[in-house]
Image (cartoon, rainbow, N blue to C red; front, side, top):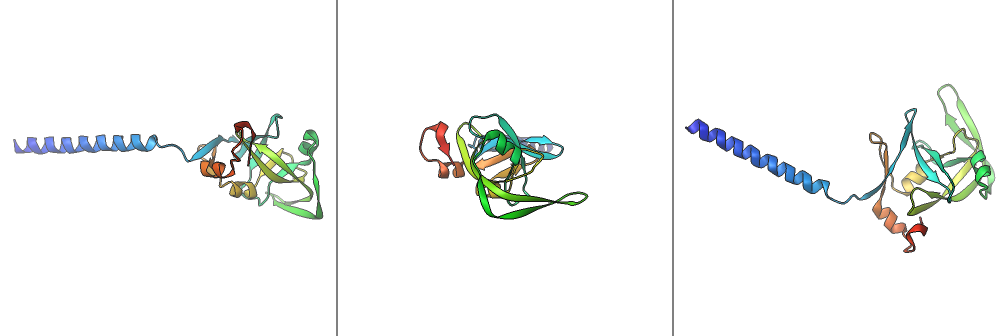
Length: 177
């Protein structure tokens, strides 16, 4: 009889703990997200994000957390007919590779709007050079916008607080950051 009461008590305590855990999980899962999430594309173990320039088609830009600056290819600048600015002196970008080091000259830059969604347009400076891809988003863009990355889930998150700070209180389709 005593053993049966102890087992019943253990069962009831366990049941109460399980119900409490389910309740806590339900509360936590229904909290609004503090981030606007963007899906990344994984290709050859590298992460890319789809971005648009104006109303044009989307291009894949490499997420490059090892680069201090963001780059755009000369071919894409020509294709999109983007206005460029000359730099006062030529910079040389050093890119370490597997077998050797690559040196890319940079003598131009452009300030262009980057569309990640229908709501927000991020103005950003891109340095123009010869690239085999459309471009890269470097640490200058990632840190400016306080980007968080979930590499396991291939997601990039921008804090909604950052989006609200830059919101210029106009038509949703014309927000510029």
